[in-house]
Length: 183
Image (cartoon, rainbow, N blue to C red; front, side):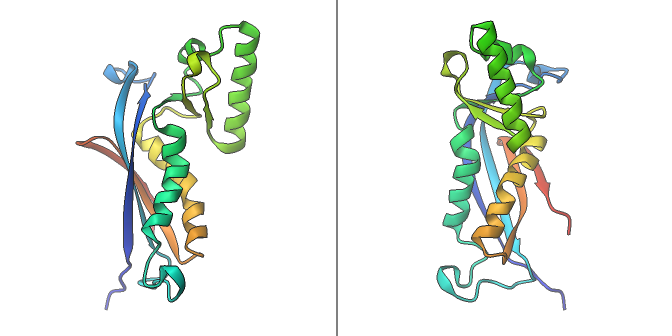
């Protein structure tokens, strides 16, 4: 007899701009998406659900997963511009106008990315919300990035009884990329 596993999936939506500066076609231009990000959690051990407490008979409370997705994805990324740290031309357009301030601002971005894997800021020119990452902001890389940000929270909120299985990033209703753990 096969052993099954329960899963739950929750999604959040964000509006964000980006560009893939290395792309050979239209995606190298500034543009935006109505992203849908789906997180799927599964039981750690077969079909074992929570046995007691407020999550009785659950993989993970949908509300807990939503809170973590809002914190890790929606709050820093909605209505912001997701930009690669290597996209120096774009960052120069968005940096503070003073050359000294711009240099200090760029070093601050680098330090934040080295410490936490990203930098969410609105301290640049025009107060534009930025989410700066150390990779090209493709759906594939964003899926992995958000997976890595959400996974520890899922484990913590479920007391180790569930794990994040996958994160899917929909750039459009027809285009989706996923990152998932290997079993």
